[in-house]
Image (tube, rainbow, N blue to C red; front, side, top):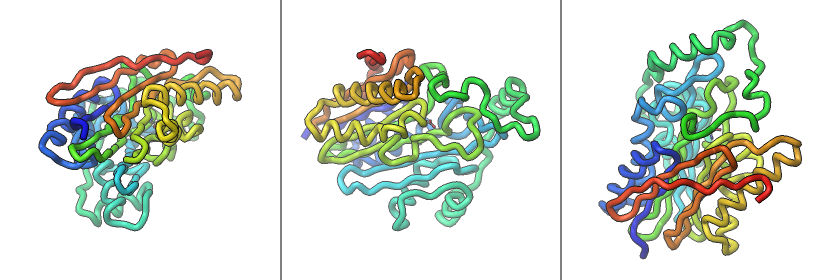
Length: 311
Ligand code: GLY
């Protein structure tokens, strides 16, 4: 069996990878370790743009969180979306997987389920996030203002890069060779209330199958959903592509989908892990996607290859 391995999105993925790697090295199962890693980022209030409490809210100033989990051995999975006041949406997604016959709970009903499961209701806001919302975006508070601001008119124009990154996706392989994955986010900053991106959608933000590999996504969720991004990457690996080739093909698919709408490709990135412990990652141009890879005792940051529209 390969050594345990973890890969995680963005510079804050280092925190996730370090926590997950310790868990894997203790012999814990892949999904447990991925969850430990994701929670380390959910707990970090310095991650201000995108994951967990303290992140930037929606147009109405409300912070809603999305997450999903998947176990590669059994294909068991769970997800929650648009959940308010629950600090650990990834753990809640796991409860959906383990305690219900369902896969996906949303909004107030997901919060009701969280309360039933003993999760506390907590205040998700930080002074900094609310101050920024009030100061930088006063027009969002205007009565009847529901039109996305200019940068959101076209998802292809949404800026996601290393300074404005979003989701943490953590993929793991444990000592038994089983794969696990977790994806957690607050979604797009200043999104329209009710907007849900790729992150909690199994097959879009995350897909994990011990027989083929694990994949996760980050970036503009609308573009990832459009191509069923993570499922696409895993199916490429099932067909014999390496994790690197599979991620590059997914970026090309995003670009091709954008071309069909006459727009330039949005900022998205994919990362993947195959059952032999090989990894890969790729992003569309101007995404500047960095990711963490942990093996043995060491976590290193790598830069993903950018795949332009003409690649
Ligand atoms: N990738 C996170 C989102 O679009 O919500």
